[in-house]
Structure formats: structure tokens, C-alpha cells
Length: 274
Image 1 (cartoon, helix red, strand yellow):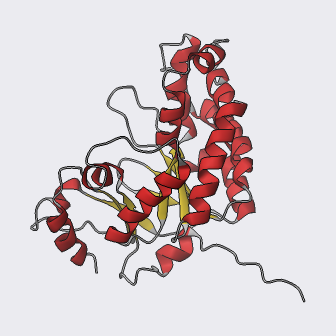
Image 2 (spheres, one colour; image 1 turned 90 degrees about the horizontal axis):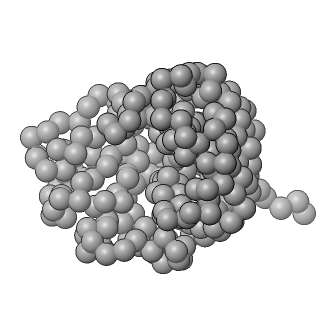
């Protein structure tokens, strides 16, 4: 008898029919809030995937989101902080994209990231969506390590080249039950912005199409999904602090709950999403 293969729900199907039963799907970035409420401001257990997954599941249970959103940038920030070996290697050449390519090809870091993501994906109770910096944002963040302080020369061609490095790196996650990939292209006040549209990242779109993942991109105004008309909106931080703040018009939502939000207020505001 041929075994039945279960295909994980994609972000697109979640948006079309939210598992939570809400009229519109909600993706929660509850990192800061959960750190404050559950960990009481303590250290996030990035070095123990099982402990992190348990911490994450507690927050998911409180908020009932429609997906499990894993932000790999935060994991990378933890793994690379103070890693002089890796920084030296990334700064070995000044060629545009060299630092990013070196980061994404680092065996030790890749092993740690894949092991972490595997435990997370296998224990998540909701469809898993990965979030990473957009190739341009990742390129900008690593570009300085090659001695290049001027970012004004970077353009869409550099972003497309960077997306080839990212698409190769994504192949390591092929066996995981992932339903979506979000590229975070929102501006960072600490550095110049080089806006690049989702259509520039064809190499990544090819990979996500092959894996049947929904591809999307976060910009400052909205969340766009590749080859889908649904548009996501951001629930403002003030929504969790003031009952008079209304939801923006959107087909689905991404919510980042501030650490200052009171649990009793959050529970009340969650009712406004139903």
C-alpha cells in the first residue's frame, strides 16, 4: 500500500482559510512580548532548540496565531555575535556580496541553524513560516564587513545576485515541513535604504515554487505575497495598548506585540480579532 504523503499547509492556504477560525489570518511576532511575560526579561534559550520550542509554544498557546513564525535573523544574530572567526572570513574580500556569501556558506553556522529549525518545525503545532532579511537587506547588513562603508552603489542587480546565494542556502531546508518564506525588506533607521521589489528575487521564487512554499515580502507599508492577490497589513503596536485603535484594512495581518503590553489588555484585544 502506498503511504499517504501529508503536504504542510502553505501560507497562502492559511490566509484563504485561517485555522484559528478568525475571519482573517494573523501572524504573530510575539518575541518581545513573550520574552517579557514568559521569561520575565531573561535570556532567550537560543542554544537549546527544545527549550526554545517550549517557550515559543507557550506564547502560541496564549495568542492562538495561524502560523508559527520563526525569525531566523534573530537566530543568526545570536550565533554570529562575537564570532571573530566568521567576521574575519566575511571580511576577507571587498567584493560586493562576498561577506553574505561567506556567511551563508559557513558550515558551523549552517549546521546550528538547520538543527534548530528542524526541532522547531517538527514540534510546531501550526504551519511553519520562516522569516529572513530580504537579500538586499542581508547584503547591506553584511556589506560593511568587506570594508565598504558606502552603500549608495548597491542596486537591484546586486540584490538579484544576493538572492542566488540565499536560494542556494534555502535548499538545506527542503525536507522541513515549511509552508512559507517571508523576506523582511522593511527599512532600518540605522542605515540607508535600497528598496527592491519582490520580482527581483527570481532565484528565491524558483526555489519556493519548487518546494510549494508561499513566498512573501514585508515592506514598510504592507506584506505582499508572490503570485497572490492577498495583501497583509500591520497591526500597530498601539492596538495592544489602546482599545480605541482600529485595525487597518487588509486581507490578513502581521502583529508585533510590544513588550510593554499588559497580558490582560492583550487578551481583550485578541477578542477584537475574532
